Length: 252
Ligand SMILES: Nc1ncnc2c1ncn2[C@@H]1O[C@H](COP(=O)(O)OP(=O)(O)OP(=O)(O)O)[C@@H](O)[C@H]1O
Ligand SMILES: [Mg+2]
Image (tube, rainbow, N blue to C red):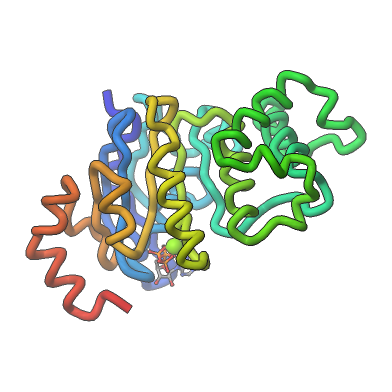
């Protein structure tokens, strides 16, 4: 059974068909990427999977069970975790506290965290947080206040907060957006390592198709809300439809 099976997903905003009858299949353990130019409908597609937007039509099966109609929180608790495009961290807390809070939020089923309870008293949560920080190479800065981190490290912190929730499916929306070139390279290297042992499956959204050729084993191409190609990186590289679409002014 596929880990994620999306069929016929559609969403309009007024007269605009942002996503039009789009689908894809993500196999467990196979890194997948969704590419397409600005405005192709990638984030809208993702937001329907995680329950932030209600689709007009279509189905989303995660591990065989429908996610349609569930609240974002419920979808999150099933192990579908989305990495946000802008850092949603608590600036005054330490790095370790941030990740620990994230772990507790998942387990307690609410993001309304109880700030009266010191998060670091929850030993098991701290252990999970330390593991996640080690994975993103931030363990050396665990006692730093989050606000003092560089932009690239804030994004890593955010990633650690998602990893600490022990996802089955990790969705990343343009993980290198706004990063310097050196941070971009570091992030791509990090993403290559993460989940390598099959702990979770990655789905990475990107508009720069060169970023994903090294990260994904399967690629779905969205253009004007529609899937125009779906296949291995080689198939996508050699696809005439994709080349035409990109040459036809899709690339910024
Ligand atoms: N809430 C909204 N209300 C109205 N229009 C929207 C809304 N969200 C997205 N759109 C429009 O839907 C289309 C698809 O947008 P979407 O953000 O999904 O594209 P994207 O592929 O993620 O682009 P980018 O690479 O810039 O992030 C765009 O034309 C966008 O302007
Ligand atoms: Mg987007």
